[in-house]
Length: 318
Image 1 (cartoon, helix red, strand yellow):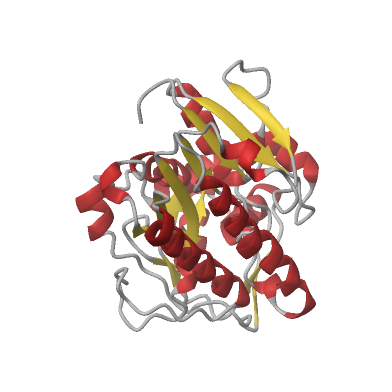
Image 2 (cartoon, rainbow, N blue to C red):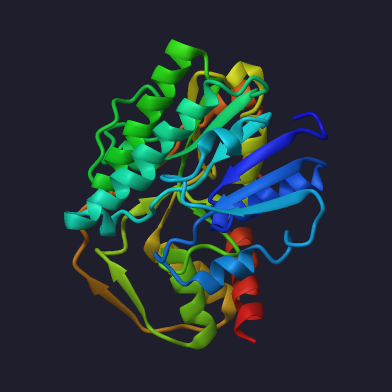
């Protein structure tokens, strides 16, 4: 990205969106951040995510519901759009709440793409997808050409958004790029996410509940690596494509607990619950395509990443 460009970041008060906006401002870009403060978790936490951005002349905040806002006005002058906003949560996407996922994920993405097709300056529209589109993939590590088979309604909505990006690119030339995140973690992670719950439990001395037997594995991606992937995805060579963004290695949940025990020098009670519907058993990203086209390579391993997340949780708890 050329310094001095204008970027729109949706979901800017969220975990990834706030970190991305901070990086863009630090790199000399103008950022318009949009958020509506959905009540999936407390607004106060999201407001705190914006602390380093508020008051910066390069940053403009717009509080708006993207399902109702004037999307053309928001993205019409943008050079880049980073669409991070979504209704999150695999386990909460079943039942009547699925209507919210359809509205805030599929419908909002279509509205933004419709506005983007008329944005004359737009160079990239980077969509935040998810490894959830793969479900229980048959191939590990999983390359992008693997047939997606989501095992949760949330994953279904993310896959639908990817298809919308594809058809708007093919039909109208919208410069879309989809990034399939593999379990992003780090400071300011959502409070319902496993690593944030675990770090908080170790800091406070609380017990930990694990869904399943703990042998399930994840490809954890540190937040700064996810942010770097977004910036690299603005290259013209990425347009029209989908990329896995992973941390470079997989680790079991039981092993995560061992690492946290070593880092803190303490232990906490651990209990196990039945596995939840919609949770994939294993995830592992084949990131060869991102390395080749984007020049992306993760730089923070799980031990260092957990150390940084623990330090942040300790600072907040004081």
